[in-house]
Length: 166
Image (tube, rainbow, N blue to C red; front, side):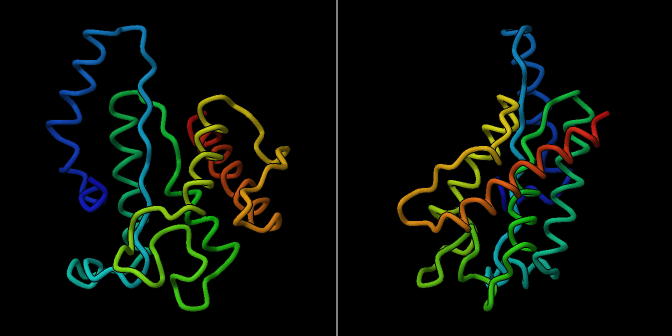
């Protein structure tokens, strides 16, 4: 669960067992783990946990990297893509324009429809090695500029992950 993703202990023993079972039943399978993302600054759990969005990101990034390395798994760097987008297009209030949450609702942590587009680009780049910066599609509800920024962030996150694995 994403609310546990920053805790390395939360991956064990169940993640280990899942990997073991997949390897037993489908030894040819390529196991891929999607890294989750840090919540918007307004999610109350951050205060409860005693850290901010950036610290959640740092911790979950380390936890996913350790689990993937332990088992030799591929990682879809979705959390990295979200963080890169946040840096490229900072939100004036920490949530408007963020790929997570809904500025007018209670959800401050799931991907919104912009985040779903970013996720699709990240998955496409990671799983199929497509250079998504060459795509031109933008959903009708999103500006071409914002979509291009999301594609750049997705591609950069995936390329950074490939460099880190070498």
